[in-house]
Length: 264
Image 1: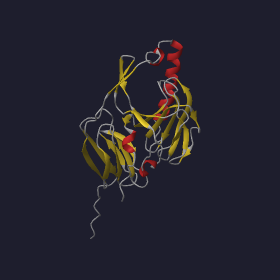
Image 2 (image 1 turned 180 degrees about the horizontal axis):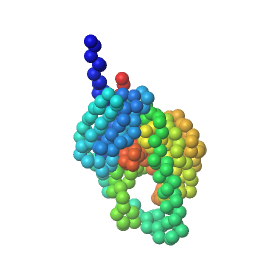
Image 3 (image 1 turned 135 degrees about the horizontal axis):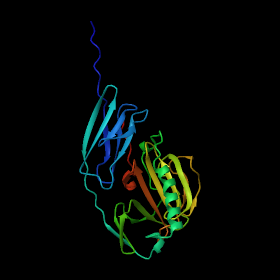
Image 4 (image 1 turned 90 degrees about the horizontal axis):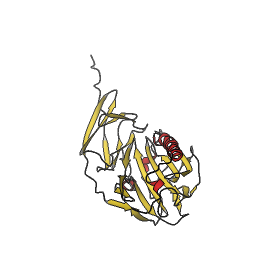
């Protein structure tokens, strides 16, 4: 009498930057459920690929569990502390630091609600797997990710982006393939803003654009022209602020440049 086959736990491989603001790219069973630190964060792709992120303020350890009908596998990773500087910016208009006008506050709230929808996107894609390039060629990095901001002498929240200084009109390109989930000009803080979902909720943002060349719903290829550098919104000079979020966690997009998913 043959015995029933014993279920096998899914395999799990990870590679990435295990640091505050970092990430991991992984491979496991197709469509395996993913849980990070006790929170369900979706499923691996049909090819078993996935991405996870570690917030700027992530704790010293993080536990990933992948599950299928046949079992589960877990991995506990040590998360190294980040190194974050102090960034002082003076000369900003008062309404860009402490807006008080009721009509302006209403506008800011409405813009925030629309942006939140874009940041909540979780496209069934794995465009993150082939690695990222810089969205601006030859730009000077004028501010690092994670620095504590002091605006007009007022302590504010950390800077969740990488600032790349370049002339107004310099071309901005998609650093990886993805789906445009938000594209608007004239926002109070961001000016022109594009959000791209590269799959599974890995969102990159492009702030202060002077020109936007596409609309929400556009499917992009890596290197495709998306807009132009500007000085719109809360900015003291022309630059691109490049940000990355994953399920509400703020990541350092510069760490993604050149990273590729584990091979089978």
